[in-house]
Image (cartoon, rainbow, N blue to C red; front, top):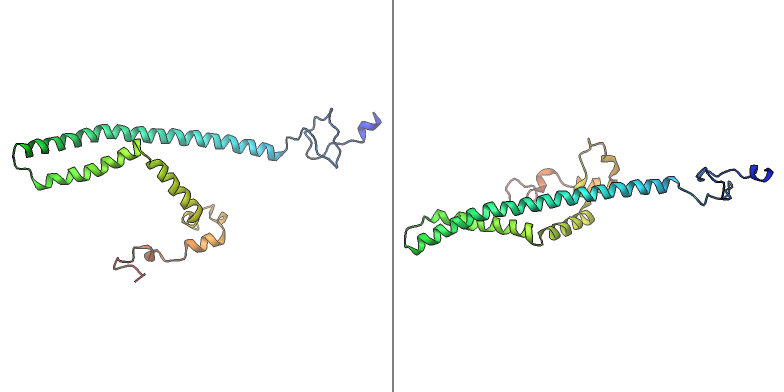
Length: 176
């Protein structure tokens, strides 16, 4: 008994050390310290965020596929009607070709989102922005988390006045 009283658990000890030999100089072999707990909580939140992101993305893709069914049918009906009218040599207003072209482009964009590689391209662009254009995320000074952005990013975000962010060819731009 005298030997066990000289061994007091260390601060990192789990507190239930009957089998390990903790002393103030060493840490417990059963260490479930705060860092391991924090890591487990972070992993749990990351898994929840990942599941939420996957659900939201799958819903967006399924909505795009549903829109393709609706707008694709309407566009196909329009194109078919114009084609039949042209084959029968009936007059077709020139204005009718605008929805054919614009609708075709919009439908192509929806198909690319629903079945193509648009999501991969968007993710790659987002990764580029997060790695190389981090200053775009600096919030207004009134935001409670503004202080967590380093001074260099804050300076980059405030480098130009707002009117300088307009394209240079616009008459009211200051970049002329």
